[in-house]
Image (tube, rainbow, N blue to C red; front, side):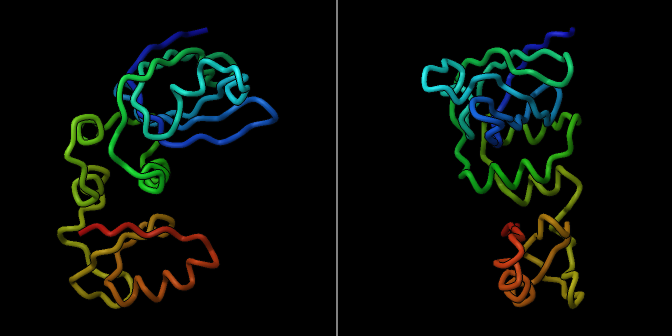
Length: 170
């Protein structure tokens, strides 16, 4: 059983069972990791307030039959909405530290243009996936493609049914 301590930003929390939670964290040392916290949804849980999405915390976790979060201490909040945190949880690859992205999240200023460029999708030279036009300002998370405003709007109307997410990258 290995034990690790690192700074982390909580991107997402999902309920598991009656009392447990599964948390997606973006860590300084390990990149994105997902871990389970036992009894974190109990009303008396001392861990739950430190693992709310948007919280920056010092986290201790162990690797034994998966990742288990055993302790956390909140230190700050990041200035991103729950939707933006969920989008990051989808985009950031697991287990790959991104120091530039960490600095943007932890110390600001955060911009989607810089974040996408750091993650390998540079919006500066992007073209619309639908028409090939050069002014692609929206990024589709599930498709991992850029779209111009008219085509993003067309895909967004379909997305309402399919829960497709777009990021305004410009």
